[in-house]
Every structure is written in C-alpha cells, then in structure tokens.
Image (cartoon, rainbow, N blue to C red; front, top):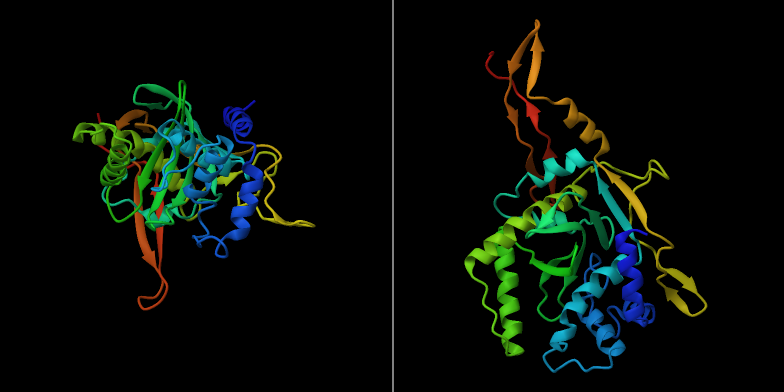
Length: 323
C-alpha cells in the first residue's frame, strides 16, 4: 500500500465524520458559511470543527483547539483534502534532483502556486531529507483564513517518524520571510496557550533552506506547461474532482484509489544526455554546465487582465576551454 494511502486509512479511522461535514461545509459555502476562493477546498476552520466534533472537545472563543489536537488539525486538513483526488506525483529522479537544486531566489511567485492541479497533491521525494530525517514525500494544499483573509501554502511532511505540518504564508516576499511570518503566527498562538516558543533567526533560515527545494517541485507542477502524464491513461492530466448530484443533494465522493502521475520523464532523459565533456575530433573538451533556473514573465495587455508565467529552464552545456 502506498504510504499516503496508509495515512489516509488511519486518519479516517480517527475522524469518521469527515465525509458528512465536508459535504455540509461545501454546500454551505457562501450561504450559511462565509465564502472562500475556489482554490481552497475547505478552510482550516472547517477542519478544526471536524477535529473538535470527533474528539468531543470545544473550540475556545479564539477559535483554537486544545494544544494536543492542534497538530491533528494540520494533518487532517491535508489528508482529508487529498482524499478526494488522491494524486501521487512521481518525479523522474534526475529531474527532481535538478529542480531541488534550483533555489527560489527573490520574492516567491505566489500567484503560480494558486494553480495547483488538484486541491491537494502528494509528491514522492525519494532521496530527500528534512532536517536530517528521511522525507518520503509531502502533501501540499492551499488555505484561506476566513477570519484574517490570509492565504497560505500548507505542507504536510511525511518523514520516517512523524507527519509534520508546515505553513508558508503567501505574498510578495521571499521564502525566508514567508517562514518568518508563519513562525510569528506560531509564537502568537503559543502565547495564547501559555507556551514559551521563540524560534531564533538561525531556526528560520534553516527551515527556509529545507523548504526551498519542496517549493521548487511545486512550482514546476504549477508552471505553464508541466510534463505530467499517467502510465495507465497516457495523455490525461490531473484535475480537481467534481461534485455529484444525488437524491440527498450534491455530494463530494472520495477517489476510489490513488492515481500516480509521472512528472518530467522526458526532461529527465534530456538531462541524462547532458555531460560535462563532449567529443571533438577524438579529444575530450571540458565544458561549462549552466545550472537550471527559474524564469518568470508577464503576458497580456497592460490595461487588461495579465498572467504571470513561470518556467523552469533546464541546465545546458554551454562550452568551455579545450584541455
């Protein structure tokens, strides 16, 4: 059984009310409940309600769960959202290594991340680590705080020992500032629970450095024309699940099983053909390899709707001096 599916089975045992309340929250969107953007499946406030109901505990007046359930909230929000599409993204190994080595420099292109092909995805990460622990993969979804109107990228890291929720605040700032803003919110929540939590600058920098490769993988999946395909159904692309009309109204049914998507297979083959030496009249010529990098640009009329396009440019052999 795939690791994310094992975690899904375990989560649904703990939270059997998920299906019922997901349908209710989605049907009440912009009616009995506040509205939220289409890129968010259900805000964290909805998942907090499910956690409180299935644990028979109260949410305090500040909208907070008891501390021992706070991490469960981050886990259920990711896994519960992923349950409806169950997309597992498997990168070509060489392509993944090249992407992970491509840092997001300057401000994060947050607009690109709103284009996740499904409400929540799971990315396999063989060979990657998180602060010294083996990282099997991670879930990624988007959060819209209905109280503060803040947008967040939410990651749930699948390590050997734990499932670790990591919020990343979206906006016109760097990855480091995004983590710093999320930590500031964590400090505020810790103070409300009367807990001493004060991460230093080194901690923020370390988190940002560990998060950066994961964001690079996501940016490719959200880029303009990502190479994503299915071995079982070649030519298909991932998409958000659709609701189904039943006698009891509109329902959101979970996916029957995980669906594995191959990412960057042809790009990986191209990367493997690039070597640090080329042959010229029988002599080896040492070359220079330009690292892969991100390239972004705006399209559309200056006085109309514009779109930010983001592309990953692969490493290139650009020549060098003869030996």
